Amino acid sequence: MNAEIITPTAELAQRIAATPRGARAARHLTLRQLAAWGFAEDGEVSAAAQQIVAELAANAVTHGRVSGRAFEMRLLLFPEGTLRIEVSDARGDRKLRYVTDPEGEGGRGLILVSLLARAWGVTERTVGKTVWAEIGTGRAVNGA
Ligand SMILES: Nc1ncnc2c1ncn2[C@@H]1O[C@H](COP(=O)(O)OP(=O)(O)O)[C@@H](O)[C@H]1O
Ligand SMILES: [Mg+2]
Image 1 (cartoon, rainbow, N blue to C red):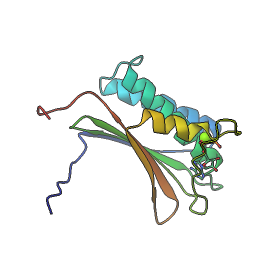
Image 2: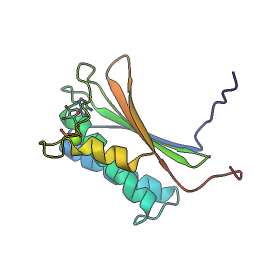
Image 3: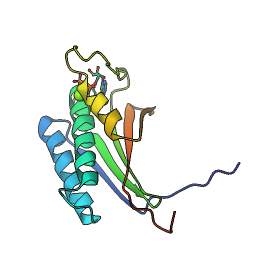
């Protein structure tokens, strides 16, 4: 195999209360962390990351919530120019529904994520699941 393990150059992992306030905190934390990594608060990367986090965190605290359990957000910055966002919740018995009916109620969150992200998906965990999305940072290191 020719696979190479690429390690992130920077990472944030935070457990956050599964409440509406927690979901807002996740978005704010994303804004602050990206600013610390040098992405302008009003820039495209920060705006896209914040929107994705807002949708995934909102889903984690509504559809993915298990009473008394926090959700976890991770932000991973990769040297080849990718920011990976991961939001993990404790609920394993509910699957995501990707709703494509534009007239339907709700279902806009994952559509927005799919439009903003260059890749996204769901990974099952021993307990619960991780919904992830990746965006380009326009910042490749080492000439990649
Ligand atoms: N973290 C999650 N856990 C369980 N189900 C989820 C989760 N995220 C999304 N879903 C399911 O996928 C559907 C679509 O999500 P979304 O596009 O964000 O729409 P909305 O949140 O407005 O219903 C949700 O209605 C829900 O059934
Ligand atoms: Mg939603």
